[in-house]
Image (cartoon, rainbow, N blue to C red):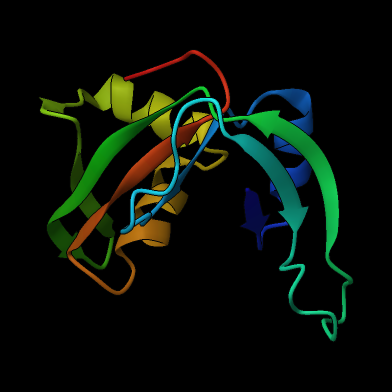
Length: 132
């Protein structure tokens, strides 16, 4: 199945093995272990895009985990939040590792998922055997 990315930086992070998963809403629970992954820069259905969409890598989904990201406090200095994977509340160190393994800093991670909402519910689609 196709995974599309809007951040150009993700291409190099996936190719180098630094981005080892992606987090998606996946409301229909379509992602399953063993499914092929086609990594695309941009959406292949948007052929009129300025930067032409292209497939840049292939892979396999090694597993999926449920994730919930909850805002606990907002201020002018940023967003405080907690992450729950399955039934486990991640520690600060585990949350930093999760954000980094997704190709983001902690601040970028908070803004990406909690910019317009207080709770994000989704699934981690893994590219490696690493789990949380």
